[in-house]
Length: 282
Picture 1: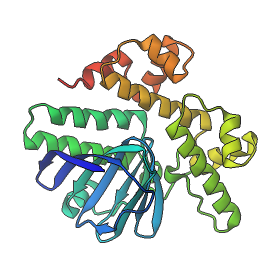
Picture 2 (picture 1 turned 120 degrees about the vertical axis):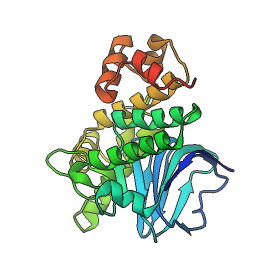
Picture 3 (picture 1 turned 135 degrees about the horizontal axis):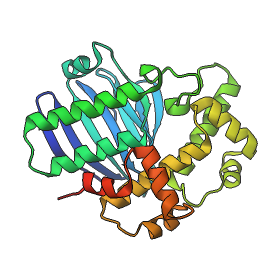
């Protein structure tokens, strides 16, 4: 069952809140967008097929689809996935990028996740179309600018590599990409309780090999990725009004309240108390 609600719309853009609970893991019927679409995941993990590329979408990875390419999605049966979908007219995207045509997977940092949630929270309050258009443009612009190398296909020098796909041909590269994708999916679904050895066992390699391959292919360590996923869960709880930070820290596997606060501030740029104000629903 799919539910879709338009939460903001204006000149050249629309923002929709989408939830999906699939009864089958089959791909949805392909469609084709006349403009760009940006997908920011709030909960769950699913695969998106954009043209000939298959991407893993989860809360730490957004994706952008460009006009004229077919797109479809595959969800795990019975699991609820939720995301924010932003539609942009082709001219609007070109104004943001100076004429570039972005497409593919992009990393979502804690700071970008805050901007995403602030846009959605702001759309619930009275706001004119000009303000919502500006917020949307800034969010998409920040997503594209913060990508390593300025786009989805470039990274290097230890920068984060969105999507975790190797650029080298051959079976070894495909194997490495599969290990990374499997680890991302496991940690996106359960960043609290799974240990390194268990993640490595489930994807079929040693902990050392997984750690080395993950860092090589994504530019970030498994620990940092896991921390980012836990911070995104903390953001959801804070947005929902959760005030027991000590209890939240224990629930998410942080050492204590102070550890949670330090990690959230480092990843998001704000401590939990300030985030509660920024993301207030009313």
